[in-house]
Length: 172
Length: 275
Picture 1 (cartoon, each protein chain N blue to C red):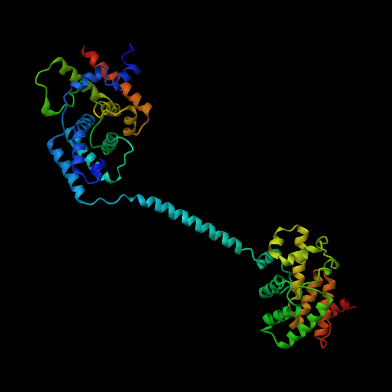
Picture 2: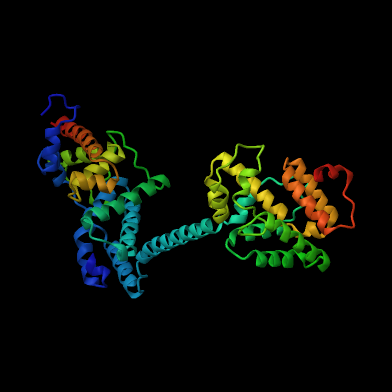
């Protein structure tokens, strides 16, 4: 990021390619809509580009990036742009339409249940889970990105894991 | 791990954060969609465009500049206030705050300031003081009255030796004049007041303040060449002194008046003062 701040486009491309897919998946599974995920994705990177001059190495770039993404997600919810309310347990999962499983194996079934369980989580629990699984953030970094306390994040993750584990147990 | 599937488990959380546990394993098996290529193109285009336009310099200097300006403004204001406080303790202003004007007193503000100037310039020759007081307020007055007044003043000075200003009684005279409004002040106090009137007056005890007030009134009375130039006003001054229970001073003034205006008859109400 410092390289891009100093005008190095190649540095930005490297940064972008490292983080683009986890960010996209986080946004996709958080708002459960490809169109909305794409919009949030562009807005997030636009904010990164715009604020490159003021970027300082105070934390990992990943934390900074997902903090911006979180703020865009919250703005979208406030503007009622998309629905992040938990779905019913038996609702279809938010998998991309162009990637439907051709044969339902046990793993696929588990995966479907997990996705359903993830979609059924409250928005803040789901986001905390995704920031760990997709972005690889620590508890402190998740707390920074979501602008809440560490204990709040722990609580959210505990409840999320308990519900998701229950989804997996029910399968068996 | 807890037997109750609904109760959160710290151990499970630790495993999860370490990348272990069934949930993480199942999640890793999920389909992993990538960002569509059109999104890549859009973002990279944005990034290139941003580099073409020179970024505005981070306005980091604004905050330090604002802080420096604030400090400078505060410092300037503090210094200004201090200067004004120092300038706001002049002798005349303090005197005017302390001295009540007698009802019969028609002393204009200019004469009060003349008395204050006389007090401040301690040690000046009596004759120079008399000339200055006669010259300044006597400009609008006829010169005859001025010269007569100077003659009257000469006599007064003989009665009040060694005064730093013509209107100030000698320190020895102070104890001789009983102050009916207050106990007798200590002799050195009036002299000290004259030398540093305003600040000393502000810090004095009440008896001293009253004495200072009386002295100032007296000096004002005696440094009123305008009244001497005007016989009726002079008589009014004498009456005012009587009203203030200063018969000795009133007698002195009346005698001076008689000397200044021998052709005028002494009013009946003041004749007793001469006897």
